Amino acid sequence: MMPIDLAASFREIGLCDGDIVFVHSALRKLGAIAGGADTVIDALLEAVAPNGTIAVPTHTWKVVNTEQPVFHQTLTPSNVGVLTNVFRKRAGAIRSLHPTHSVAAIGPRATELVQGHEHDDTPCSPTSPYGRLRDWGGKILIIGADLRCCTFFHGCEQWAGMTWAVREEAWPLFSITADGCAIEVPTRTHFVNTWDQYPNFEPGLLACGAMRIGHLGDCPVRLLDCRATAAFVIEELRRDPKVILPADLSNEF
Image 1: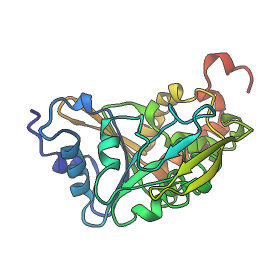
Image 2: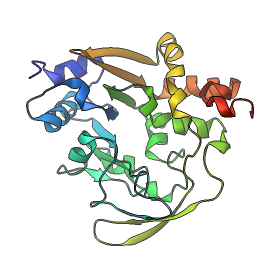
Image 3: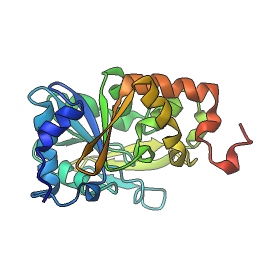
Image 4: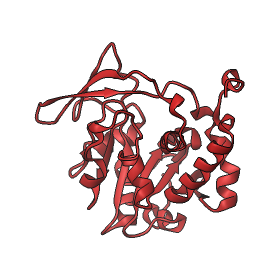
């Protein structure tokens, strides 16, 4: 078992009381931890206590689509990792109602962070939880993975004016609330594979101070400042969108 005080380690990396932190995780990279995902979640909550809020992606884009267009707020599992499924079932966790890119949060600002996500016709609009992370000066913590998992960059694409990154026509999807109410949520989803190129941003993010890299044992941990990250990425995308285009599309823009 890993002999690490996780809460103290998260604080050393840069979390503190009052932070709003969006956490991506690949827990297998941490190795064996007594208590597993629950221990990590406890440590994250402790690191930002008593005034901070922790959020995680609880995405369902692998299973919610035009063939199976229904998302259930409590019953549809997340397809982005063990920690996210343990987190969304926690007492006090509030999950947004976006059918493909929902977010779950725990903390004083959890409701405020996730509310209204079902009104966004793209997953990462300025009024989505991802837009609020930028506007509120939140942080992104990536445990054991690289920048390819960072959904926030999809928001930067949209905020930079890259309208081609999402479908023009909306899918007719539906969200079912915990108490059984059905809501129609037309959704324009991402369809261009920009995410495999997101690591291209890393040198610049490190150089401008928007990101730092720490470690939990042998596990790399990246911490991004959302405002500084958005400012850097949006400027880069406006300067040259090819930085995140796959090779087969690089000559089209």
